[in-house]
Length: 220
Image (tube, rainbow, N blue to C red; front, top):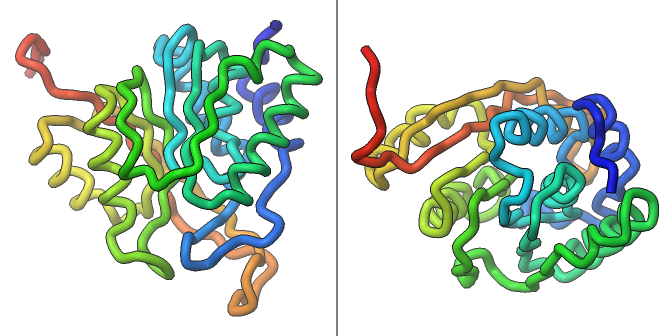
């Protein structure tokens, strides 16, 4: 399989994936924008955190992060979501991608219909765009983040921009540290009846979080 040769090339592929048909507001289901997903995945790829690595896409939705990881050479990706319809869409997206970009993609995927709290496989990297806890369960993103910290030493996690203090506090309590941060003008396309605009933008960050170890050197 030939991997995408650039961030832009990856974004083009991801833009062709299917989004949510009937999104569930209680799960805060919004499709991750392809260029944002591509930027984060490409950054992880460049530092050697995707190729030949096992990954978990927690709350995978339609599968854009996990499929992107497979396209960039991940050896195995777990797609985990408690919404069966979303998981079926993710499977459909992977089939389409594998038909175009390599049949072996589908062989490296494991789809699990379950709450992320029940997933306990150890992986090299977690990729997640959890619900932000605005319309659905409060502090849902904290549960996702803590689960990620329990199964991996490397995490890429999306949260609202104002979550910086909260992310830092969780990292400190769990023995992790923030090693990277990207901020985006995130487009929320009209998907629910209460939306008044076709597209509304919110500030969203993606945190690169690593396990803090005794061997880590700190340079002042």
